[in-house]
Image 1 (cartoon, rainbow over the protein chains, first blue to last red):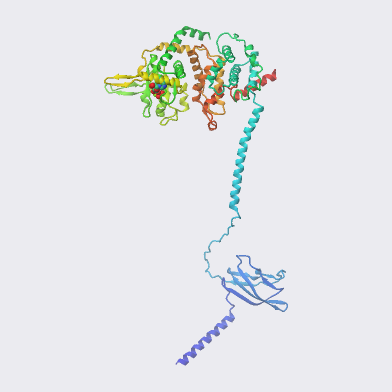
Image 2 (image 1 turned 30 degrees about the horizontal axis):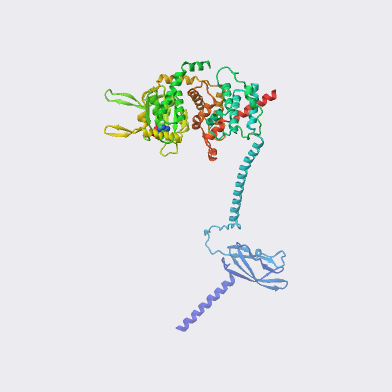
Amino acid sequence: MPLGSTGRGAMLVFCLWMVGLAWAEEAPPRPPTVGIPRRLEGLVLPGTELEAIPSADRKAPVMVQVLRVYPHGSLFRYDIEYTGLEPGTHDLRKFLRRKDRSPLGDLPAVQVEILPVLPPGQVKPNELTIEKGPSLGGYWMLVTALGAGWVAVLVALIVSFFPGKKQGKRGEVVHPPSLAEKLRPLVEGAVRGDLSGSQLAGLERGLLAWWRKRLDLEKCDPSEALERLRRHPEAGPLLTQLESWLHKPGPAGVVDVQSLLEPYRNLPAGEMDTTGGAA
Amino acid sequence: MSESNSALLKSPESVVKFLDGVRDRIGTVVVGQDVVVERILIALLTSGHLLLEGVPGLAKTLLVSCLAKSISLQFARVQFTIDLLPSDILGSEILDQRTNEFRVNKGPIFTNLLLADEINRAAPKVQSALLEAMQERRVTLGRESFRLPSPFLVIATQNPVEQAGTFELPEAQLDRFMLRHRLQYPTPTEELEVLKRNMALGIRRDGPGAVARTEFDVMEDRPVGTIQDLVEAMEAAAAVHVSDTFLEHVVDAITRTRNHPDIELGASPRAGIALIKAAKARALIRGRAYVVPDDLYALAPDVILHRIRLNYEALADGKRAEDVLVEILHDLTRGKQAGKAREAVALAAESRA
Ligand SMILES: Nc1ncnc2c1ncn2[C@@H]1O[C@H](COP(=O)(O)OP(=O)(O)O)[C@@H](O)[C@H]1O
Ligand SMILES: [Mg+2]
């Protein structure tokens, strides 16, 4: 019976549709899941016209669009589409503002629910941390700064090295006593006869140094210079006299110190250069 | 003073004759090198060890061999090599097979004059064994300690340190040498004389063959003096008068090596002692009964240069120790601190007056 079976099938579909319709009318619609857009149509809200706040927040839990606005007496009627990005209950007022920027006032809450798609207890991946990118020209600025610092230290070193020498030279020109100046108090002391042993030694060395300089023997080997001094008509007798005065054993006073040193009492300081008797 | 004069007057002729005799004898074999001969005599008179430094072929060995033959001294020569052992110089204890007892075998160091030839070729261990014995004048072999004969003198030779295959002696060991003398090349006239003398030597027949004769072959064996002559000369040298002024010169020079800005390591007190001893001997050799600044200026390089070390700044500036020493010797004041102290004293005295 092909006719009978067809009629029965049609009856079954019709019943199911009726049941479904009745169920659908009785139960409220299932809230959308994450990422699925849903429309609220013909929503009447009090106050002046509303609009969606343009979203600047990457982490906003809901995206809201005002699709259409109809005047509704003194009020407005809205078609609003929202897409949930985070499961939970959200208040859409947070994403709306007045077109005239007046406060929302006594706008009633527009609660929507978003269902999760993931099973509960799902392990979430670590939060992404967004790092600040390098500031513009950072590397080159660093290199330039380091280079400048290095040059500055170098210049400081060079500057600290040279002025010392320069000062020394400047000082020498004015200050350190010349050989003649060093000799004068020793000669005077010897003439008075009140030199200590080491001052006598200094006097002898000073006189030798003075003659070495005078005869330009400073480049010579010291013992060779002494040989040449010994042969010099003026320096030779001085050396011999100094030796018998200071070194020869036996009674002192054989040497007339006063007349021996007379020529050296007023040595011109300027005649010799300044580095007498070494540093 | 009177003592020194009397000691010198006791036998002045014999001492001078002896020293001249030794010098002349060396002069018959070695041409020139007067300064070196004088240094060797100074070493002999003071028993202060001598280090001769110079490139090979400057007659260092010849000189010392000649000295040994001119005085009737016990003489030994050790050629230092890399494989030499301390016992090769000092000696050792050996087991006598027949008596089954240890017997001491004294090494070549038991002599009056030891020529340590090319000392810087031996390992440091050997060098320090010799230098220790030189300092203490005694050697311990086994359980017994033996005194070295007297007089005892070491003359060491070494090649300049730039040469390869040598071990440089450190300053602490160089300090044991009273004098270090650097030999110079002979002058052209001396060189000519060396060549002429060498050509005259000819050939020596030796059995069926023949060899070229060397200066070593023609050295006369008959000595010009005995140990007694040497001891008298040593006494005369010790009695030479040293003035207070000379002592001041020496102290000033030594102190200044320690305060000098270019010098890292200054001279030790041994340097001062050596300077005085050597100056006395030099005065005697030159026929003086007292020392004079000449002696200081002539000997200071040989006494002081091997005991000081320039610092890196001075070396980097290209300074030489010789020049720094000349500068030190002619300075009037005693070091920096001493100079300042003296100035302060003088100022105080002036303000009181
Ligand atoms: N001043 C000199 N007088 C005589 N001979 C010399 C002189 N200088 C060099 N000679 C010759 O050179 C040789 C140098 O030999 P040697 O004494 O062994 O030198 P060194 O020990 O310094 O290496 C001598 O044997 C000699 O023939
Ligand atoms: Mg040799």
